[in-house]
Length: 625
Image (tube, rainbow, N blue to C red):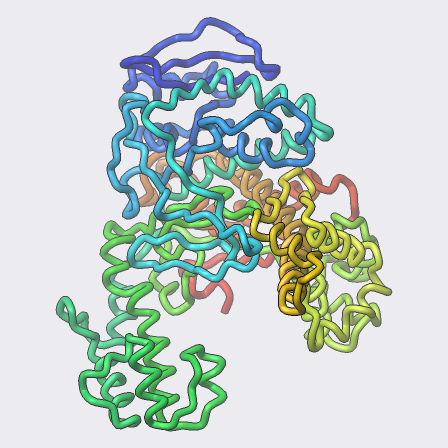
């Protein structure tokens, strides 16, 4: 049963609906203050709470100590169903754009990127709707999402990419939009029923909505963060905290060394790339850019202090004292995830560096007294997903040892006699999944194609589909976007009678680029679906472990997670659980069992392993040492 939540005048409407989208009782209107009590009621525990956007409603429930077991996020589901080839011929997919298509993701309330822009169409008692239009910029239509280069700024709250790919377009609804969540739910359920693969879409939407719940819970609980340790790290690397407007002492010393080495005036600002490049050119350094890999090729005394400056400057601007004041002022880093914020289904972040947390500050991530972290990451997730997608049993077998235990897939490829070294196996598989056409990848790919014909054929067919301007689809039904109008225009111009060689070359380059995008989309998108199912299973299993006894040390996270193990961090194929030390081994077992369950949900009984590397540690920095 669904309980559809909506704003109704001065109250909140709660409308029970069946799983077929039919009314299952009369709508009740309750006061905003009563929503938490209603959600906590025993008869509502088995319901699927259905709302326009999880962050519009769930944070207020968490603030009152109420956890929701299941939800249906209409915004996230609408985006999937509108684009999926599995639902392409349904009424919802063929209809024109509606207000649901214009909804932007809403950040958790009270976070650093939340700017209070009240909307008259929001429900009473909730936090205002925050427009992410300036944060989640749409992809340029003339390049594939996989070619996006931006990675955001951590201090200013700017949008970060989950993997360098373009996020979904973010445009907030106008105040005169009147969204009917009950009607939208009915339309979505009908769309799923009329699709070509209802079971797959149901699983995808359930996992996507569970991910939205988990993201809100991780923001609510926060990642434990020791501000004093972070300050020590910065002081050791940069010197004492500088006064406003000044550089830290170590950076200022390096700036002076850079100026002296190239005989530049004391007014040269090394943070100004154009000015620095001009000064370096005048000094005969020979640098064409300030990219690290290009600088490392040069032989000049300025290179060493410049590279050191760049590394420390990155620490100072991305995770310096301003970051600490902004993102972890109360001993918790509350990241702002955007579920489904990347076209492949991966998560994005609206700031704080949640998806780019450098190792040199992870020492500040320290568990509460009497608690510990259980850190787990999936080994070679994408190639294992590719093997299962293609049902390539020989490739799946490469991820197992002879006694049936999981092993390093790249080492297994070497043991099978396919290539000579683990490095070649890794580079070859990355080339197959990302479209590498030069170097070792190109040399190894023919051998991989002979050894694993089904897997290589799958990504090759996905690439050819992209080159034709067609959609490709993940295991559960998330489909890639079509290339934009400018892409089609360039392709069309290549066939003009007077088309020159440069036009044809540009068209071929554009075609190959989009093919690389679709080649990887099916693998990365399916890996994101596996991760969503993994998170959903972990979340359920952790709650089932129950509360601590009264004698055990209570955690510092807010209720309802102060006495229970809970997720605090997620990064594509890695999770961090904050758990009472006494439950660490039980949590580790549940995290492994959840990985197995995710594999079965997506691929049934196909014999592919999803092994985990699991560490139990009080400091996140020690998890992979």
